[in-house]
Every structure is written in structure tokens, then in C-alpha cells.
Amino acid sequence: MQLPVSQHIAAIVPYPPGKPMDELEREYGVTNAIKLASNENPWGPSPKAVAAIGRMLTDLHRYPDGSSYYLTQAVAKWIGSAPEEIVLGNGSNEVIEFLVKAFVGTGDRVITSHPSFLMYQKFVQVRGGDNVVIDLKEMRHDLAAIAAAVTERTRLIFIDNPNNPTGTLIGREEFDRFLRSLPQSVIVVVDEAYVDFVDPAERIDILGYIRECYGIPAVVSLRTFSKAFGLAGLRVGFGVMHREVAALLHRVRQPFNINLPAQAGALAALDDLEHYQRTLTGTADGRAWLNAAVAKLGCTPYPSYTNFFLIDVKGDATKLYEAMLYKGVIVRSMKAYGYPNFIRITVGTAAENERFAGALAECLQDLGYVSAA
Ligand SMILES: Cc1ncc(COP(=O)(O)O)c(C=O)c1O
Image (cartoon, rainbow, N blue to C red; front, side, top):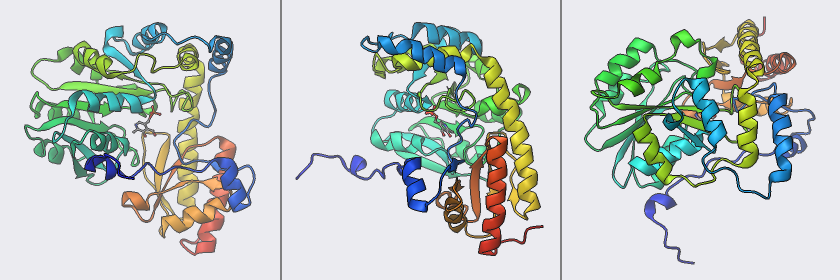
């Protein structure tokens, strides 16, 4: 077969597919495996969201509302913006795609950090754009190096804040200096998938920058229902941006990108902020408990503003990851991200955290990495 494929498409490395839990359990001979690998919400979705989705099921023969009118209104009210400043996506992933589609063409440059969320670079590759990748400095975005890398071909800068996988946060003043050092021709996209876990006093005032708009680059914030709201499987995220940017993104989106259950579920989740709040409290408590437990085992946990954190296990992380799989605990090895001795774990429920700590103690002992206290 001779397919008419462009070189930049052929060069894309597909996103590594995970295995279904059932398959993993069969392969490793375990039952009741726990997944602490994808930064999901271990407490599940809001019961109100589940009920609202259930009520929608008999309407599945209808197309959804193409403007997601009620959800957009509710998101805008929650954020404190106008509905015209919101663009909903099939996960915040899709809003990343809209931004790249709308602003990046062949040979245009997009700046991202390494390691950070992988999807930015993928979408740029699809468009035939050039990825300019700046290494993190001491696990934080190197804002000076990012600013220095901007040229007249730079269209977008993606910054995940907090960063995935390191969990670090850019300070408000640091961001302000960075933004004001940039030419107005670029768009700064702050991916705030985990900002729900950050104290509001420490968050960047994105809306302030969107409203300021003249004399500084356009700023876009990306948010998601996948993490603190516990709706990763539903696929709803959104961007907050100047209405002129939003109008351009609407031109490149499919009319029915937010499906019917997704609109109903996300809307109901916004009406259950108790569940959301419980998640934030449970995450903070679980993170503190896990930090202490991990340190007691001789590993080094890294401070994080999110529902996940890195652990230096003082030995090969991939071997540890494999050993943990045999205990039915799924974590993430950071070897491929350039941290060969680090794993990343997501905060689980209290029971999951205890199970993780028990399995870690056994695996560290078996592998002879650190001697448990
Ligand atoms: C930094 C970051 N941005 C975006 C996403 C994807 O979010 P969504 O599920 O809304 O597409 C993730 C998911 O892990 C993430 O870590």
C-alpha cells in the first residue's frame, strides 16, 4: 500500500495505550488492583452527576445542544467570567487541539517544557508545526529560557501550572514578570488542569490578564472536569480566554463536541460543590499521610500542589513499577520522563494509600533499594 501520508504525520509516535484493569489483573495474577497512575479522582463522580446522566439516557436518540448553553452558563458563573469567554471541549485535551488548529500552521513554533503534559507537542506535530522544548530547571518551568526562545514564528506557549509530572507551581509575581517580558504576538496557554488543588490565594489571576488584554500577550487558561470533579471518563474540559480568542476557537470545533450525558453530568457536578470540596480535603489529607509514609520508608517525596507527587525511590523506577504491579498497585515510572529513579503516584482513598504504602515497603525490601525503618 502506498498511502499519501505527510512526513510529519508518519513521524508521530502514538500515545502509549494503557491496558484495561481486567487484562492487567489477569496478566499479573492479582485481584482488586488499584490504579494510582493517572491522577484521577479516587472518590468517584458526584452522585448528582451520575443521577443526571441516568436521566439523560432516554434522550440519546437526540443530538446534544451544539452550544452547550446551560453548561457554558454554569461554568462561566463558577469561574466568574462571561459565557463568551468560555470554550468547552471533549476534555481540556480538545481545547488544546482547538488552539493549535486555530493558530499553528506549517513551520510555526510552539514552546513547551520537558517534562510536561505530552499532548501539546502531539497536536503541534499533527499540524506540521515546530516544537521548541525547554527543559525544566530544578523541576520547575524555566520561564527565562522560555521567554528567550520566543521568535517571530512563535505562536503559542504551553505551561502546565501546576506542572505534570513534577507538581510544582509558578508564583504570581514570577508569572507577571514573564508575561510582561513577552511580545504581544504570542498566546500564553496556562494549563490549569490541577489548579483546583491549589489555594486560591496562590493562583494566577487569569481573568485579570484576560480583561487587561492590551499591551500583554493573550492568556488562556485550561481547566477540566477530569480531576477534582471526578469525571475523567465523561470527557469535559474548558478554556477561559478573551472573547475574540474564543470566537476563533468556535470556528474550528465540531458543533456537537460535548455529548449529551457529558453536558448533563458536568452541569450536575457544578451543582455539587460539596463533593468537589470533599475531594480537595481528602486529597490534601491523603497527600500529607503518603508523604510521611514514604519518607518513613527511606524514599524522598517531592512537594506537590496537586493530587499526585513524585517519589525518589533510590533505585530503578521501572523495576519498582513492575514489582508493584505484582502487588496489584499501578503507579507510573518516570524513567521515560528523564527521572530514572522516580515514580509518580496519585493520591488515593485512605485504604488505597495504606495498600500502596504496604506494597511499597515490600517491594523496596525485595529490590534492596532502601532499608525500611
Ligand atoms: C497537565 C494536564 N493537562 C490536561 C490533562 C487532560 O485533561 P482532560 O482529561 O481534561 O483532557 C491532563 C491529564 O492528565 C494533564 O495532566
